[in-house]
Figure 1: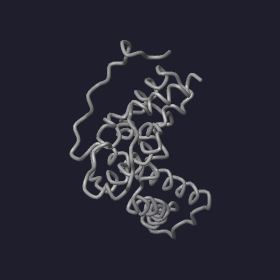
Figure 2: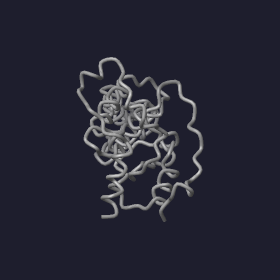
Figure 3: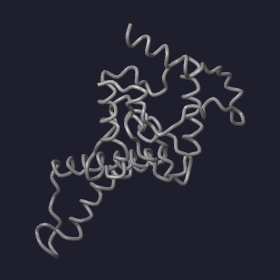
Length: 206
């Protein structure tokens, strides 16, 4: 199903944020590519902490009984602990990165990186959210967005990621056509949005 100017979905207003909103529903690989070194550090700590906690727990509360020698922890238990640490650490890093996109955490570094990437794509005449590369129709993109938007806030209960290209990102692309201090040095000459969308539609139906 395709939408038309007179047949558009009703969108809820974005939630309030303390910092600049970058993307209301960032694509999975984009969230991961914006991980900070601190996110990787927390991930590594999680991987190490779970097996270490398991060993400490055995020393404090031996499986053989209080006051007895701690039992040997099996390799399978350690592997399971590492897997839990890997998963939990990744989800923590993903949540922190997602919150920066939403403007719920300090995100000055991400704002600058986003503006560079978006300006570069717009200067190349490309749709910055790649919705023209999606196999979904307009209705499918709409549903995909409604399923994944704000999913980071409940990621520990239900891991759900945005794996669909769509145009619903709670961002006005016009903001990238304004130059902030220092951006003139990037040398990008952005093509008009109308032209970019017209070319994308032409390619879609050609």
